[in-house]
Length: 134
Image (cartoon, rainbow, N blue to C red):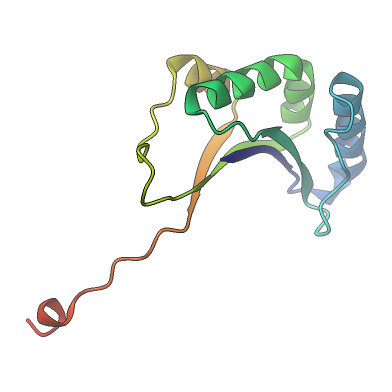
């Protein structure tokens, strides 16, 4: 499990302001901002790689609280923000569903942050021969 927060720029005019926000993030959490994406459409910062789901959510809440002033500035500049939680699907895993805490969801909503969950390693369903011939 790995989560990043992405700051997405749709208007190249605000590119320099986004870089300043990134630099500000490094003052709060050293090394978290590693520069703009190659596409120059924003940047991403690592939030957590904790494998325990409940602790992972607490990491996300703590991260948001640490950078809340930068989030507010970014949103005021027209920068979209997305928290992207990446999960590797493991058939042997006991945890195949994820309950989001109200506290985390409230923080996301309060700051206008979108939530994306990317699940990797999931096979796509394919109809079996008997179903496809019906």
